[in-house]
Length: 159
Image 1 (tube, rainbow, N blue to C red):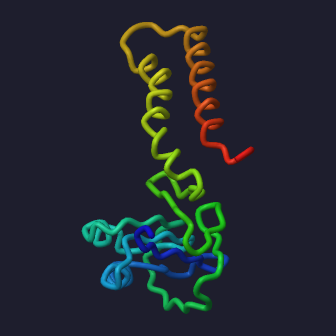
Image 2 (image 1 turned 180 degrees about the horizontal axis):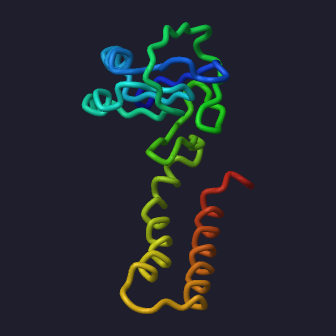
């Protein structure tokens, strides 16, 4: 069991009001939720940030809404993926992704290796001095090979 996260999909085609704000996030938190992921818009972002309650939202909107929960426990579409009850999710300022449970430990184990692989390029482009397209291309090739190797290690194919 992981932390409880509220995940919901706003069914309005064009947002007409916020699906969350300070009141709803405070409420979710009071009932044990550790975060919120929604396709809907949010409001009161400064107040929500002050709660230290992480949210991923599709947009911001200033107007209130009166949300109606139609179903609980059904798959929802949020952040470009379909989320099911008990999915392991990772979200940050860049978006939300689902981590298959059967490879979650492996993903955690290789996270630093992925950062190290990116450093092949980042260290080069951030360093002082003149840059070479050929050297940059070589480092991108090395990065690609390193990432491909990591993908093979945690791939569910053949397991």
